[in-house]
Image (cartoon, rainbow over the protein chains, first blue to last red):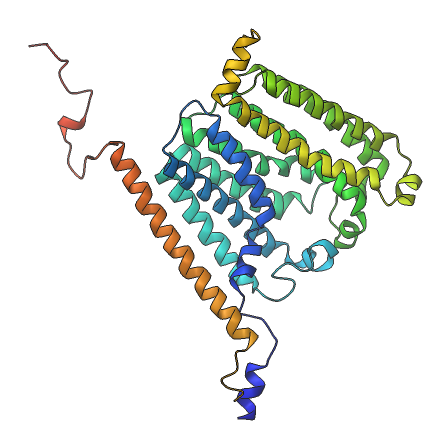
Length: 319
Length: 67
């Protein structure tokens, strides 16, 4: 009796993860960004799918993104354990076994790709398979621990979902899909480097060669400004394609002006002042970067509404 | 008494089993809905199914009105 009691009161969590632990493995916060951008890519495309097909496409893209998150957590469990920000993830905290994460990641990868192919087309499925491979193998296993440009190249993985959404609807890659990809791709470095500026100690402890660790904060601040300047033509240029319009242009001009001011402030700040006010400017810029991406994709969505077409026609917008 | 008490471990297992069950049910419902949507839209219902079938190959069909 006492043996049984001792057994059931054990607190070790191996092999008995809750459903929520598995959901955490799929990085739900990252997944929400994937769902939103893929949904926009799907809805702004000139071809409309049946609502159930659209729902299926979004779910399978999200599952593919989640699968790559699980593979990332499986491979990175050692550095997640060291970093404060990630130490409570399901593998470091002991609620999920590494093998379970690997199995879930591989299983969901295969299932999401095949199901996306059946639900839409095989080009979209191929792009999803490439995205998973790029994030899990190219970024997680190779670039993340080997180069300070990890975020720049790895950002491609996060940039694919709107393109996949577009391709799922149209069956082909066009300028608009490439622009949505480039927007997310160019946005990723300033977004993550701002985070790295105020989470630097985490990356140092884990020996991840973030730009802040290998080249210092001053260089990182310069990189943020340079990438922000390079991002602006892409964001503004999208206004003059079939997915843009005057409403998008107005929103993009405001957001890009704010983003540029933020990047400028980060660039001219001495490190001592940033430390003194606990990186308040960097933290604000990081929050702004989330609003920036959300704002642009929400504007694409607004432009896809019939009302926006009528407004564009009424002011003589001819692009 | 201790054997019947609901332990945190049981709660976790219950949540996992319920979650997996609901996920599988949702997946089945999604595939069913997807099938209905595709059939209603009139997607290609036939394929070559092991042997060539000229009637579903647009290229081999004679143009309408030509004798």
